[in-house]
Length: 316
Image (cartoon, rainbow, N blue to C red; front, side, top):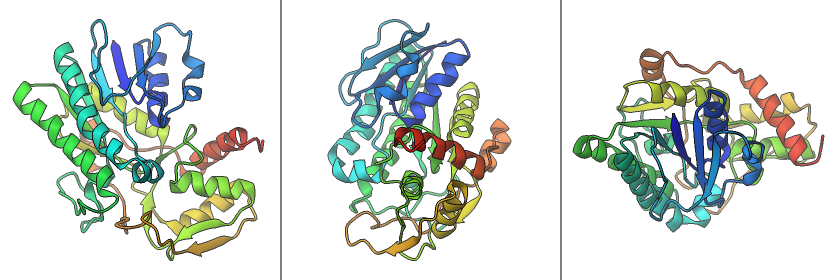
């Protein structure tokens, strides 16, 4: 197959490039490198079947030749990015998705939207199922990301119903692994980098908020299965093992062998406004329809991620 991956130089996108290339497909990675990095795909340059297009998907997308899949991962998913670039975040979710769908329709390609658990907002249903409509503050600081993805899902389903585009939607829950940015503001790189540097692990609030963490190779496997299936409705993908943020900090200290202390901070800025109190996927749909569930243990995934950051931070 010939596959276009927008956001292909990003954390998840680069791993997906690896997977499809390893199966013998032709892969075109598209990225404007605003949050992605050429370092994530440097090992792919010169490999048969791989090409890279530097492009901002909020502008018209042109790709010569046929395409079988268009996988739309381009996004600004980290709090650091979407709080600093709120308008660009909305444009990527709206214009970027529209352009990617238009390309898929023109090429008669199967389309996948990488959506997010943030469409559920600060949920009043737990764990979150795909039929839950969410509890989102559309005018809060996080709304630029949450609503960009909710709009993108609506646009995907409109193209599916009105233009008969063959579409897929995956709602990604917290995913981690090598190639995450150390400065993206999310809890996994924050805690691991602090632990490796011997700095205090900063827990916002009292640490009682919960998250669940899925290793990137498990998520990629889910993507591949979903694209090969006939499932058009949204599918949650994440790990249903739920941990408090405090418990996760303790797990990071244990895995890294760090002597760092845990400190509790109460930020006064917008980083935690409307931050979900709980987050855990119900993955029954993925298990039933795709035969998918995560298999990488948290400790194993954290060790691989810590090894990556040791190298990138020069601490190996």
